[in-house]
Length: 127
Image 1 (tube, one colour):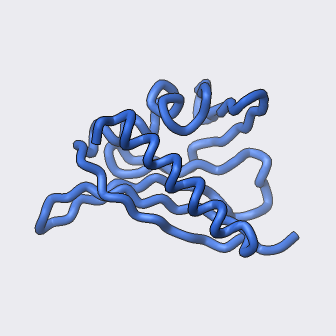
Image 2: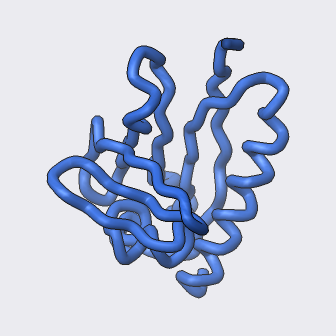
């Protein structure tokens, strides 16, 4: 299996970190833009998309700053996906930084998918 490569994408979000974090970390927020439905039990989230489901566990989080998930089926590899919220000290712009991993031949597709997902997030937030 080819090695996955880490990549990051950054999006400016015209919303408060608290509101943004709610969309990134709660089942109701995630089901607005990331998946068709989301269930949460303990540190495990179950994401549902058009008849399929995937489980991810939270491996790191800090309220209004970041949340990192690891897909349960990826035990043994170091990949994860993370939502990080950063505020520019000078302009006070809020940025959402996505960190994810993809195989080299799937990198462009992965970036396009995230771009589409984030556009959906921004539309649902009214940002």
